[in-house]
Length: 161
Image (cartoon, rainbow, N blue to C red):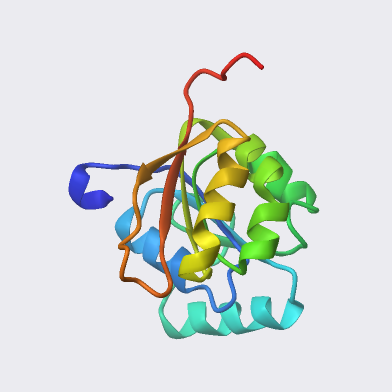
């Protein structure tokens, strides 16, 4: 995405696990505000340790990573930081589908969404769930990839229903 001139300033790593996607985002866009969440408090502890080991600054300012323990969007900080211009999530297909409405709502118009953690035969159902929420697929996944990555964008103007 950065190769194509994309720039993001408010990023969410939803279901961060070890923090890798949040670290990569801050590496690509070091002036961004970035927040990472996970339902598992141990994942947040692991992310804190990984941040220390990788010289990632923790905090709420630009260029720092804020961490919260939350299931989905069930945290005041996640809601307060919205709307996001980039959301990344590497979680299972079921939770991705369940969270589709909340994710789309948390994205700003034109915001980008990168989804991973699903199998090839699950991708169509995930895309369909997000299309129902005014998201459009901007790149087709590699048809040979066993673990596809989905790239979507929120429509700039909502369709009339």
